[in-house]
Image (cartoon, rainbow, N blue to C red; front, side, top):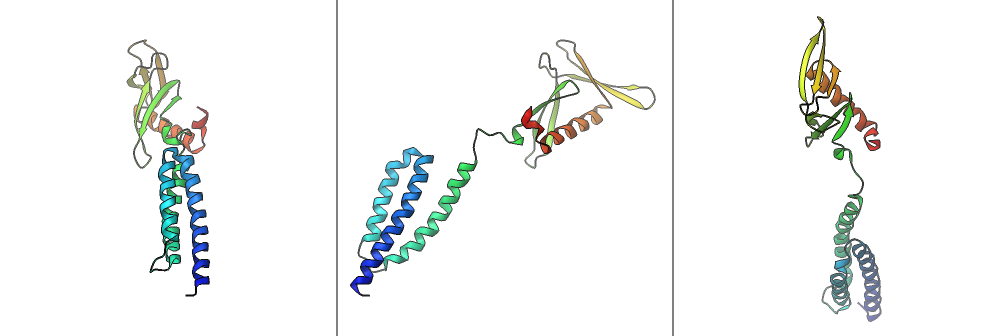
Length: 180
């Protein structure tokens, strides 16, 4: 290797690595301001390594730096996308159906579970009183033990729960939950 090639390689390697580190530094400082000093120390260390005389050609370090930077960029981008200010459908855990407040949870697979009826007036869980209306129809009353307020829905309690779960699913799939 002639001395001209060695200087050219060192300059190109130094410029490219400095550019990559500057971009990484800018992104990291915007996300984690406390890393500024650490990042400056790392940059100085890497620049000193890349400009030092070594038995191995300096350009061999460039692919290592690039391959190390790719996962770092992916992590930073994924952290940037996870904005805690914007709610997701999994944050939607309460709604009003049949003039009754309903609260629920989700399983890991997204299935709606633990659906419970609450009084819209005093927020106490309601007692369920399913009963028949005639030979084929049934109705479920939801009675508040505290204020005596009664809400009702047609169908037995399992039918009512299924209706509520379908309404919750509809609100999630149509993004109606964002308006509530």
